[in-house]
Image (cartoon, rainbow, N blue to C red; front, side, top):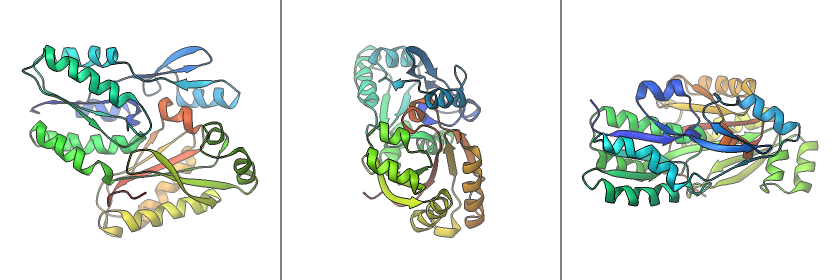
Length: 294
């Protein structure tokens, strides 16, 4: 029996089928699509495919920061039931939600002084955030005290290596990550920008690689350079994608050949909170390795 509740938010980008058996409740983010609000709830309210189709057709999509009130409503029942809670948030490097969570936790500390409520900044995004939560669930299930799990998370969260590439640059241009001129030239040359999550949890372009196939191969070589135990890697390996399953599967095939001792690769869909900013055509790969570098 676990000694605390481990919780997260829906941009963890795994699936309900992944979270439910691990007993990990999650707070749902929201996004706006053509003036209508939707829940980022693993595709139940609106599938990722539908979202990306509408974005490609010109629909305007935006995300919003989760309010302090939403966290209060999410945590109060857990604390009222006598549970201690460890909550892991989406990276503060890409969202202000971490601060909302911290502010809510301060309020609830006064309401429930007998309970522990810890908020951890994942410094991760998408299924990399999920990879961290998966490890924390493993520690929880070993009856590791909540304080030790929190400390482990804050010590090791930068060891989640997170690498992305995209074959569709228009939404990176729209978001200002790539200039319009560079995007036009990149599109003509079939450039796939290779990005990573930096130590501070923000996204940064590391390389500009010509063609998807070369980008896939480069991810494999980066994993060999940075993962725990190199080609002998035995840890979890997650892939997420924004409506480009075939690209994700092709990447998974290369990785499974290079790292045969890794745990079975799990492929997930990039949810709306992250997908609004990437658009379709993005593949992201996550593994445990050395602490991230700039």
